[in-house]
Length: 164
Image (tube, rainbow, N blue to C red):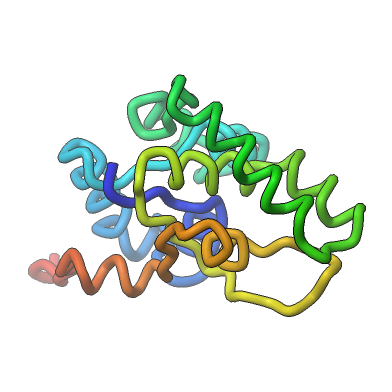
């Protein structure tokens, strides 16, 4: 994979920018890019999303492990690196404990291990109360961009068809 997507990419796409009902081209683009081994995510993100019991949960479940990757042997050492980085910063203990229990931790480790670009809506923060994905990426040398940067880099086009 070239890009690994954070859960917020899917959630905000569904709720705001690319609803299933008015922009199916976005969702098809994700499927096509996944088939080309360009875009995906991880099973921990899938686990977060399928609990919603909505259209997004159904879409995620239909994609399966081809889209939402399981950690492999390369990811396990990276988990240690990410954990060591998080505990070596000035974050509050609760922030570290929370980070190490959620998909973000696994997502950063997977991106580091596989040299993928992590795609998220999160922005860096100086807060010591929550570890943000971009902060972890900066600290660990992982590329991190917004979904709009990804779409522009990949020259995604969602073109209107003929009116019925």
